[in-house]
Length: 384
Image (cartoon, rainbow, N blue to C red; front, top):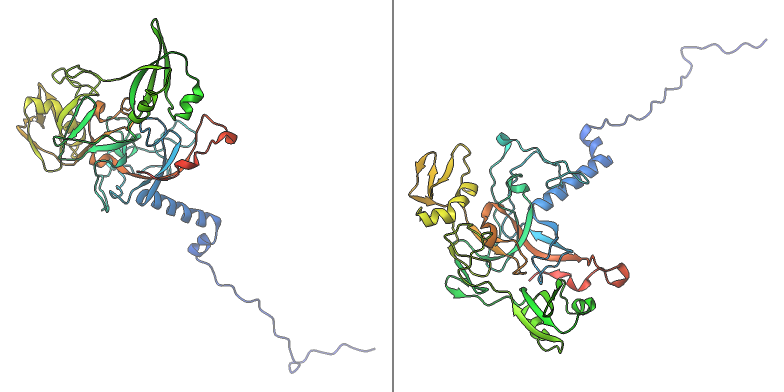
């Protein structure tokens, strides 16, 4: 019987084959190679871009017609005036006041965690004529950087003296040339009712028919140039521009005080405060600037500011003079008689400025279908 060969010490042996060792990944290498890591990186880039460079906004109302229309999607430059550092640090990224598809707040406002607002250097200062986005100053239910966004045209900057007389704007005692796109309210008497397509062809988005005992009248918001064309129409009997007389008080107009006979068509004169400007706190100046100082000027929350009997008190001390801590701006909508702006609620503090509107990247007409030209291609481009 054949026996199996015995193992011998001098017999050749086969070496064990070891699998190649793979280098151990660090957690940073692992995270960077995952979708989560890629998503986080993209998210940080988007957040940084929106904060520092450009941020998209949508025009919700008609207050800037005929320049910006409801349904315009715009880009706002943070580079012009410089981006602001956030005051509210506990906030869900890429949100403003509320969580997406929810009525819940997107932030936690803890007073001792609020940061002072600072502004990075920009390559331009705010100029009269700029279209600016800002946080709505009178709002009190949100921190400064999370107040509702408004968009208006800057009419006067810090240090200017502004006045309005019979719809005309005067800055530093010089009458300004009216904007070609600025709309006003008119009352047009006609012989017959006008088809809605007629107003669409004339690019007049707002019109309201008023039936009077004496005939028909339309309330229209349009530019003076369009009204000159209206005068030539056979069925137009007369055109009356809305214009309130001087010294007629409108209690809804700033500074909301009976001693100032101001209205939205006749406003001022008012000196726009500038940083470092010192004003005597006379009775008139306290009536004009007291609430502005109380709301926007005191950054040290330990200080208490009060306006009592037309006098200004800080920490119980009566102030005879006050030096402003930041610049202010007067803003107004291009739709003159359909805009809630500085004429009504006052001035925009510098720390409320968000940026400058520079570009329309999309425009949608909500009153049209896709086959009727819902996208207004002609509106895309740089904002003048």
